[in-house]
Image 1 (cartoon, rainbow, N blue to C red):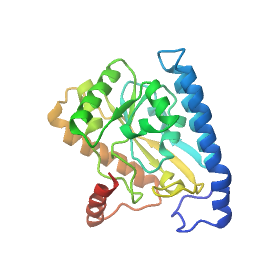
Image 2: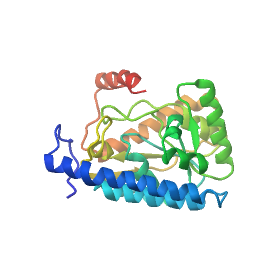
Image 3: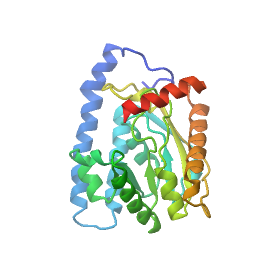
Image 4: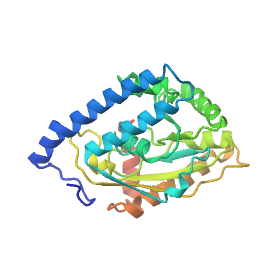
Length: 272
């Protein structure tokens, strides 16, 4: 049974843990292996990635259903598939299934390079033309972002988590400049989005799922036409402000005070 969104219990009830470990997690692993194999096979017969993306959407929706979460999309009219950089806060391993299952158009994802090492998931990412970025190597990171810009210029939307990793606290972490860099270089808009509830569903360092309602809230695009690289920091700050506002508008959480935000920023070093 799906609960109302609120603080995740420090210790989940034994029955809920048993269902998570005995049913939900195995179903997600089986779905990942099954759809990953389908994606690998489909990659042998196509070049545009359309079938692979549909397979990824089927995988995502299966995983979300297996998790017990119920997803609601707010202001979905902004998800029109326009070539843009779609940006969202990062709370959980379940964020990627929610995004793939909710965005109703084909896109490419810019993600940490170490995901390419995972069985099935990494194979799909490689064969479907997703873009790896090494956040620990600035030179490699710039090269990856420029590759992403070329993808944008072909008319393919991009999606990225701007925080470099999952939050430790449940609150949005400081954003990197990558999304603004790509959007300004391509002279295309940024679409701010906020995920609410996936941290309570499956936070970092947890293996048990706690079914709760999940919301994907979308805001109007931020235009970058006419902007230059000098504007990257300002655009990043505006993007973070918009996504944080969406998050706290729909979350049970209250926005941290300035001192708490500083402490969260410092803890982000450990997370990365």
